[in-house]
Length: 553
Image (tube, rainbow, N blue to C red):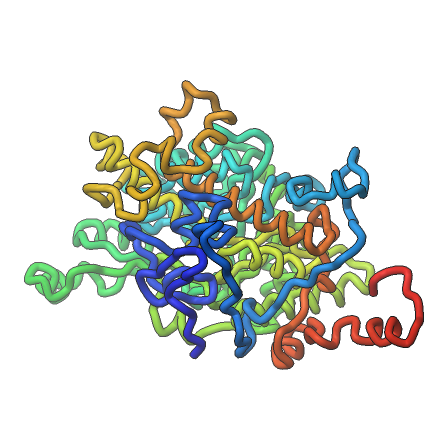
């Protein structure tokens, strides 16, 4: 197993737990006091792009080995001349071709375009209690930044206040809160996506959302995710709540209605009970049946009035990957999110998360290969988002390049949740009466925060950017977690702009697979990306032999 370093002396970051490829700890805590790269970037923003203590230091790369096949072993190419995709109204002069002028906005969709300001989106934030507790920060932050956010599965089903009668939702206060919070600051960029699984379909989520919100919402069908191969799960610590969930139609383990389970719960031998979702398509036995069922579901959603539909699939093998791309394209879906193993979630069996499925970089490389086959036959390929353990600006660039031109977005799960936790913890200390309301976990500012300041204006590098957007009087209604999400997004945006400028690509459409290379032969073989010293080697030799070449290969 590859061991990632726990600290980065150049940036002054430290992981509390064992880090993974994304630089996030394998176990990310809502009460964490710091200070991994994503955590600190939520406060300092784009300053975290650079080594600390400028003027007193010099710094060199610590990345000296490239082992195995993963995103770390893709490297970004750069050029010494040229500029492509320069935004309208600008020239190719050195005065205009500067990294702040790189256009990182874009859109996805076939018939209806959904715009975004930054090519990232959240993972599915569903029925886990941590998603509910920090939703205000997540949704307001995503809306202000202008990126899509996903309401995950089971939100209605676990809501005690929701009323479901004969498969029709009469009342869904938590789902309403999720959607309304995002729409409060929505200005035409980003989107609110509502995901459905088996239970959501039975409960009539699609019908309810369409009747109440119409085409303001994208509806998403779910085949799976990269962190686990079974349906969504949560743990509850109330026996009454567990019984409620069972009566609402969920699989609950152990069965809270069994006398022996109740006795064990009473005496503390069992302290929590797990709620599971059902697997989809278990009654189907072949691909043709899956296709027919899927197309019928899409047709039904279209008849309800949905103009934008997406699909989320997990790190299954090549057959399911091809099916998801082919069927989503045939159904003219707006987006297909492909989630590889290596990411994280609120609750997955640990060894399942460690051992099942296709690692992200391999899955994404095959997604490109299959999409390319379809495109070569003249077929329109669904726009795609890549997910699975991605957190940094370089990983955004690499994922977009690996899947270019089909990949429009990079889906980030835990990375975009961290600023929500962090901001809420700070808000709970600075505005003490609000600690319980915002689910703050701290009694005092963490040392890494106190070093920066004691007020939100001092702590968050993006505070005044948010104030400029919403107005000074509105800042009292903006959660600190949303300000932290804005600050982190600003760092990711600036870092992506810098990498794109170095590759001489001044808008997202210009990014290609030719902008990255593989750092070892195994990665080159598995991804189809050229090995680092093979790329343009023939061109280099032509130059040395005195031949002139007018453009890059």
